[in-house]
Image (cartoon, rainbow, N blue to C red; front, side, top):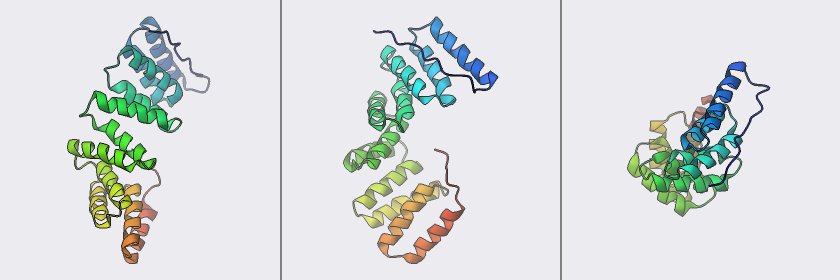
Length: 206
């Protein structure tokens, strides 16, 4: 196995306590550089303080040292979702293969595939996620999106309504419901959902 340098982040603008936590975690890693856990723990600290690029590098090394631990490709995927979605998809695929009953890699994978227009692949992973947690709001929303894209409007309405019942403040579900009502020609229902959207915050916990 090759050596990978330990990232050193710029702590100049960090609070003293945060900088100390990062320094201590890095020192622990330097003391045990062949420990996948130490690489992962340092990555966790970096990710918690929004050093996602550096965290991703550490998760890569953790996975090199322990390729059977699902957390390393999964967390690597979270770091890369925005800046390198193609690599993120590959990470979530590896995580899903490692632990078939871990729902979160499949959810992220399905959502990213759906966003890229890969409906069939997304449908497969959502179906597996639904087997694990059939009432999960993200699963229900994904199923609603797929049904809508396939032109199955009544089915899309059913899934999306269930998603909103499970998570009433989910803006994405409300937007999809607007599109569904628009497709059904129900302008009154569209107007009602638009009124609801006006009072739901723009950002939601994910």
